[in-house]
Length: 424
Image (cartoon, rainbow, N blue to C red):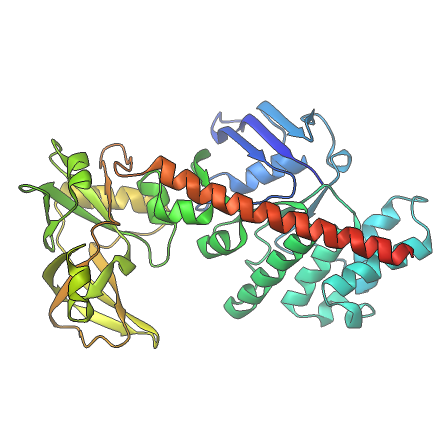
């Protein structure tokens, strides 16, 4: 097991462009941390710097407190699981898993190799496939073989480079669950790179969001979702993504938006005071069909009427869409944010989540209720979240860390019991 510390890491290529720019991060022993961001944000480069496949331009990389900048990859005792599995097609599953052990000539006997491989295969439900070749396995099984090879190395940490991107949607969901359970069972430090924010939210103890080589926010998935530090993090995390509405202060505790006037709590209104234009961040689930909202609840939000262009019914819920016409300045801001998130565009529309029982339909006006206690207000020039509560966010991450520490302690206690039983 290992802790990994990144101190002001920088990676510059020949043209002087910083692919990774002054990134500092402390990864605790046993922690599962996710590096997430759009294509080209530097997440894979950062992973390769940790494992030793990329040189570090400046800064320090420490594993268990020891500086390893100049150590070769084989001397860092880290196991990497690649996107393309990197399996040998002519070898059986058994020999693929055993390969890193055989490289260390003379260190392991045949009996030791067999035990390590069969234990890893049992953990990953590959026992029945040990005599098969990779070409006869499904994508999910091949990925498990790649993970088995990492397990037998008894490495200090696992590094995953978008390991599920080659799988179909159903298999990705299954493998997410398997990787999560395996990591918790082994309690091993893991760094996982993905551009899929769903993977980031479901797998990680903490998530590090990167943009153009710079670290934007590191926090538990829930803190990122509920207390994003800026426009980029708010827009990148969540599916459907957060809605951004241009708004102007219009009287006491009121913001005028493209879909109507919205009354907001006084503490949030104070953050918008004195600003000509702000961006209101609203997650789709903050909306409800006003006809289904209890009277006792209405006082905690704002009710307004807006035209719904169309709806999408998904069985357990449905989405409604409201289009608006932004000013040229706001349109350019949305386009800039879209480019940052590696998207073609951010359409000038609001997505609302509706109960499956709602009778709201497209092509007509709908009365909607918005929980204004939960909205965010952003400065359109700096992107800063003006309404972020750092203390509330820290409590969410502390709670997640505490739960995770308990899980790691339980996993290690179980491992010790299994070792003791095997020795008896």
